Length: 603
Image (cartoon, rainbow, N blue to C red; front, side, top):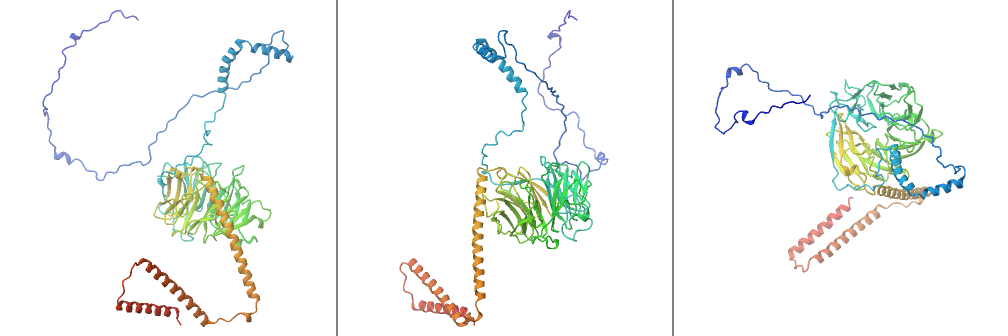
């Protein structure tokens, strides 16, 4: 449709322009308050308002355009030769190629077609978007800031009767979840109405557990399967081994029979690195280490008795309180016992006696934590009584490094997965200690008061930045450490390796020296026993007392002469003392000598 005519209105026809001006304010209406209307209302005091402590999140869905791919094949047959050139004759084809390559159009054509072909080839390349491009670069030293840690979240036991948190396990894929086992380990002193439930928490929501695990007996240990994050392995207080699949709900998926299970609480459960991802083993204070397959948990596949006398008798077995298995050493495993002894075992040994390889003894009580260094598997950490000790497999008689004796009992410990010189310990006074023995060896680098009650368990995230601590009242605290404690320092591996080697050599020298001294003492004892009793000289008591007095006075006179010489050096010109002062000094010296004689002669 075409526009035939447009009507236009002039500005003068719009009307008069508005002109505004300032003037004083005027009160048009004034309504006074009416007390009668206030009687119709009731005051709300106090006012309850609900708030949400977690961050508000919104869910969005994005449907991207699907990229369709198709596979095609190309069959290339050499051709395009002139009629006068036989492609089967090598000399003719070489002569023709040289002739074409000398042509000026050949180079220009190749340059144009090369960019097009290169673009097509690059489209077919598969690019790894997760590739690390700077693995070989030296790490930057970030120890300028002071070591510190801050609380990220606190997960409290929702039950009215609080129970200790005995074990913590982090989700293997991204560490987004936290599995905590709760149980009271005081034998026959658990309060009535104590719940058996354990929980899986979402790290972003500390208000309510995400999944509730409902076992028949309280859980002492709880571990995620590293190959299947939906499967969890647990050791119960009554000695049974339980397995959960979170896709099937809160109830137990697999449970060992009570007849073939442990007789005491299970203090250690570990998944094995197998093809199926279903093999595991457990340890208990009944002195047995059992291997299981979670697909058929009616009875264990193998049992090893922790009898260091190698007689395979259960009544002489040592109770296991901790367990260690390193995937790089598939035939070896280590057990920490109630008696403070670490037992190194070989699973593939032919006879039961050969399965116990050696022992390491150095603690005065149960070993609550046992873990190999992730960078140097020959060295391992043990935590028990009032100390944490670092051992080497080459030195069996004593540990190569140890902490001082603390005032509070140590309950758990773990290595940092990213720094070979850093490890963590928890204590009964609610303190978390972070040790860096490259930086400081006598005292912890950082000591943090996490809570007022005792800390029972500890777990470190795979990147070393987050630490989860479980307390006696069932409170699990998630802490984040500073970058200096979770970033590999420059030359740290070489320094730690040299420290371990130096301390191992020192301990070997000490062991050799002690062995020689013991041998000499043994020879002396055997030589004395072989002599007849008549040849032993009779002890003269008076001679011994006289000799002791002479030695005592010699020491006193030597010390007095030394002090007089020092006093003469300090005094430039001493004034002549009065008669009264000399008499007093002589009286004091005579009194001191009489007192010394009385001390020496008590008879």
